[in-house]
Image (cartoon, rainbow, N blue to C red; front, top):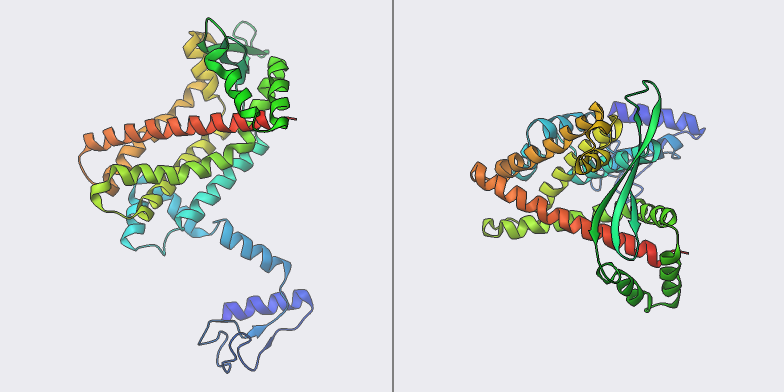
Length: 341
């Protein structure tokens, strides 16, 4: 109790308002016998709240920064699936709550994206093809110390006649629901490739948090269907999904902080431009390989079964989840087009 009283006195002095014990509990009126009410747990010491207390309350409830965070991260990284197993076993005090862990790491990822930035490909759309171009600053091997900007174009799909896959008709149909949407679709179709790319990239970044939040319960749903016979509750699968996604956030943080660009690496490999790839671009493969190895190990530890079955289920899970994320990304881009001013 002494540390609590010391903190209260410090904040009371800071606010200029002396702290004083109430005659009874301010909440339920139970006679005061200690620092906290023996009936409802309300504090008996009444004082004016300080700004530092509000900050501590925010950090304590919404962002995990205390010592338990490091213990949680250590177990999350070193033993795939063990953190989920500990939580489901009822051993929860030593570790951060799964939702708080997810929120903490997601906030850190988005903060780093804002501060450091990430290079996104420029999506190119015209009447016959869809693809993306990647502009990336690299070192010129013929002129050491002289950076150059390399640009790669990767064609994803092509249509020999008419609009690609009825893209214009689809957008026009959606635009017919609202007159403003119709104008926005027409404006988008008439825009330059650069303007289209900027709009689509902006729509992706603006909707990224919502896509990740929307994909999380779906990931738990896949697990529920995949392990239907185990009779596990949906909440148990959700805990596993939170921990796996939190680990993916850790890898995303590493990919943002470490030099190199994974998208540029894929584009260069597809086009066979190996000379444009730096050593740091290859380093970006390590986090991706880690998640490929991490997921089956986590599945086996939490759900049991053999190694081959865990690998098979993890591949199915990543494939289905990847397709859903692509669908959510496409939906986010369509929303950006329909709301384009």
